[in-house]
Length: 356
Picture 1 (spheres, one colour):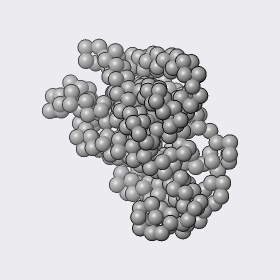
Picture 2 (tube, helix red, strand yellow):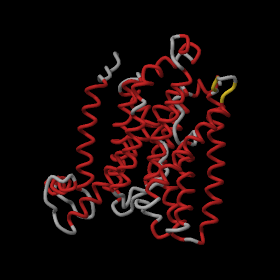
Picture 3 (cartoon, rainbow, N blue to C red):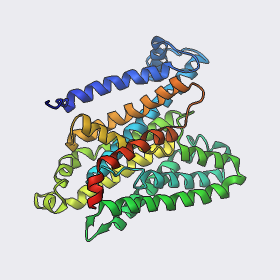
């Protein structure tokens, strides 16, 4: 029996993009009260300055749902791209922003920024959309993500070579250290309810009450990270044979690592800065793309962005439809999906694990 032919990357990207637009539209329509597509499009046109307002409170409802959907799309795309870059750089399909501590480091940086903001504006902590918080949290998140992944890569490498087993163990150890620091911060911040609640929201992830600033922040980080794709796509394919072979073929290994590291940290930190820690998206999405289409990074990385956006927003919409008011936080939801998927990957690669 012949295997099924995989679709070409270009047409698949177009199909996924169209599907994403449809899911965004349905996500904005769906809520405690269903809004027709015509109403949603009119409200969105007003936001873009192309039409009249729907009037209060309908226009406000449309805008809240619009920014929530656009933030979810940006977060999913950013985490998917981050996962694709990290797996390509480490040549390891089990690597992800969450397992290697990137999202944890970004979350820790964001928590430190929240503590600083809470010192002079505790009532504005949860939004963090105006004043210094709008810029401080993403910056701290980026520094935390970059520092964490750099530390993991440094500790896991021996004479310039990366061991998969060591990589995972170091990632787990760093995540445990971050979790301990998080627990200490939460314990110290219990006296301030606003700050404590904001840190707790970042721990479980949140897409509620997102604003234009949140959407702009994550999309800005995503676009900046996506700028590295043309400079690393072909080179990451050459990495599969090993760094020495790639270097012999003319690849600047150090430059590619730096670009991947910065791109992965920037996209992950932007996602964490606006939505908190949402694990496993960066692990699951690249695998779905490789299984369904291609492993060539020049095509895989763009597909990871649109697939990650569709995956996160689609799961969020599905659980809102099924659970109604009892929806789970996105970080919890993705852990319930990604945890079993990670176990599946370990079982699937158990022969390789036995050889490490």
